Length: 197
Image (cartoon, rainbow, N blue to C red; front, side, top):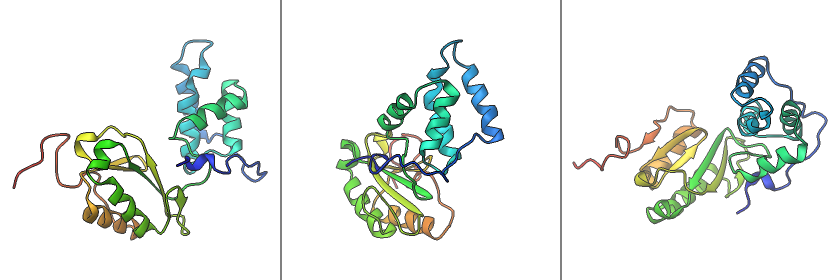
């Protein structure tokens, strides 16, 4: 599956302006200060992340150009980084960005069933955004919570120890704007063994 940002990416749209917010401009300065003199281009990943967060979860051409300008980099070099890492989106995403881990531990524990639940509840297929712009569903490689498989990442939060029932309930609660509990969905602490009843 292609990363959603690689499909019909970068379209030049005059209305898609991007300037650093006052708060983020100060953050940019602090980020760049962390790198040795003459090495500010090393800040490309944190600046892309900051730009993406400011731009509602995706990077348009103007945001990429602003990162390039800020770091005195060519646009193509910034674009190379943005298209290499799956954490950067080059097209708009839904309010809830659902990343389903498909690596072996999660797959063996049922991540393919989670994908079916996600399609059913959100109404969108893999790599798509729902018509109401509330959900985008993608598959990703290992998110590093293998012992609590299967798991998904929604926006910045991990949801672990999922099954068809608790994942469906979680997505319905998101759809209904209800509060959801992140982390283990069975009450496991960290990566401790599963509690026995």
